[in-house]
Image (cartoon, rainbow, N blue to C red; front, side, top):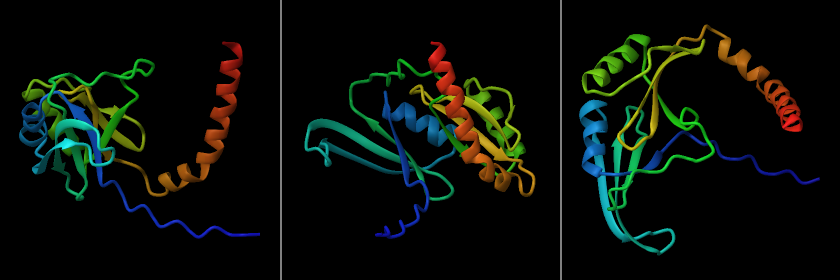
Length: 176
């Protein structure tokens, strides 16, 4: 019997990248409204990983933990298209602040800037607001409110919960 070597730990998110319609519009939203500084911007005519021709600008906004939101402006002024088979509430990116009061500060700031947000959504262990950036990317700002031991208990039940969902899904698919 051979044993596989242990995988190195994935430390965290480095960056999440998304297309944007307009780099300056995106900069205004992330830097001026959300307060994330623009820390890098590069341009190229060829994609380094494929060699394909396609002029673009790739730019990064830094979050407090050193990870980044990154965007590609492909120079076509086209909105990214949503997934045709996925509801718009599914694909989103969640960022964390320290307190629910901090979530409310962002809600007020976004609303003042004309950005529509949800009211606070109580997920039990987190409280969140949801909204869209100028590119149609759904964002969530959340704060943890879990009780001591709650996340550990959730982790202990996670595999059983997924197994139950898999069974339920099979039954739903069988009826379809």
